[in-house]
Image (cartoon, rainbow, N blue to C red; front, side, top):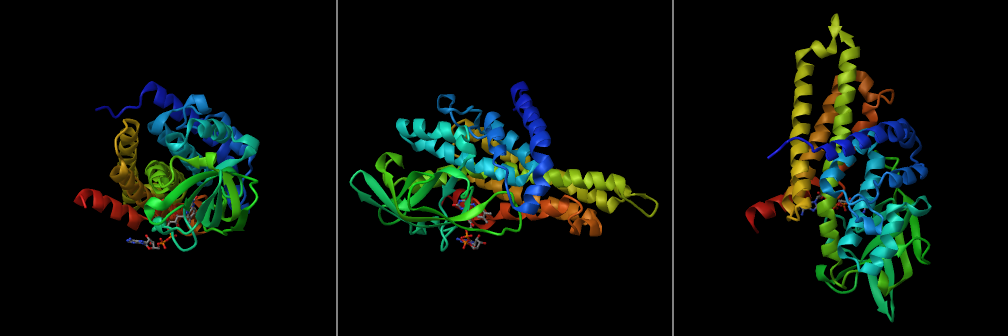
Length: 379
Ligand SMILES: Cc1cc2nc3c(=O)[nH]c(=O)nc-3n(C[C@H](O)[C@H](O)[C@H](O)COP(=O)(O)OP(=O)(O)OC[C@H]3O[C@@H](n4cnc5c(N)ncnc54)[C@H](O)[C@@H]3O)c2cc1C
């Protein structure tokens, strides 16, 4: 067992940190304020291989594996959580196609996602207005008509929904969880309608919209894998995605810790820097310890995934622990800032808002605990 990064891993992490701090961090506050995302950034991410981290080189990716993926994602999120989630959803969608799609589908779709063709991202469309946690209750339908499927339904909370070239849509071809199939729908397909944009509390640089399917006709060659395996595709993708959200949460938590350290050094009370007050030192100790523990869980899940092992339990553990460590980090860091933590003058205000959704999306904390308990109890 070795807790050191290899030279290659260290190089990848250093490169991601440098890129994130130079290219992504400067616009993070503006993206939050304006609830917008400069799509040129997608091309910058693509040029660095960050949209195809889990995709083989044959299809335009860099195939760096999950361990490197979490190293990169943590650095991106330290700079900007919105950019990290945009990147994460592209990678999640691409890895699902890579794992389950036909050769022809992979050759058609993956190079475009990896290269952010036309400065567009990729979207993962599972949740619906009436169901998120209970995803198998989805109602969107895919009716076979000759060589096509006709899709109808509404997808809710779709990250990258307004700026994607490809949409991975889970829709019903039959009853039950085994009656769900997955399709890659290209942007611009008649009947693929971008609906309401959500006015979110945090991660406002990442767009979240409804995606409406109105008699949206897609050729059968765009189905991902066999009919009826759509739910398995979604759950497998989320196993990987949850490791990514573990890393994203760690990035936000690390940024919160960095902000706390800066503030503790510059602010004085009772004739000495805040950093000399033991009550606040204890907060720093708690933040740092929990982030470290979360990082080890996240790395372990990533290493196991790279080794081809099942990570359902480990990914859920990484996600729930990291997102909760992140919640504590932003809360204590805000507390350390006193009143200044409660206003927009300091980045901790944005970090506090950005952190909140990590306990909700890609499976809320309660669902992660359901998954972990099921695995531990063997039920
Ligand atoms: C900003 C944002 C981005 C998102 N991006 C995407 C995306 O790109 N693609 C996509 O498909 N979805 C996306 N989602 C949806 C997200 O995954 C869901 O919001 C999440 O899974 C929770 O589902 P829900 O909102 O329907 O809540 P519900 O399922 O209605 O849950 C409500 C509450 O009940 C709890 N609960 C539900 N069932 C149980 C249970 N069995 N045991 C204990 N507690 C339970 C939940 O944990 C939660 O606290 C996004 C959501 C947000 C907010």
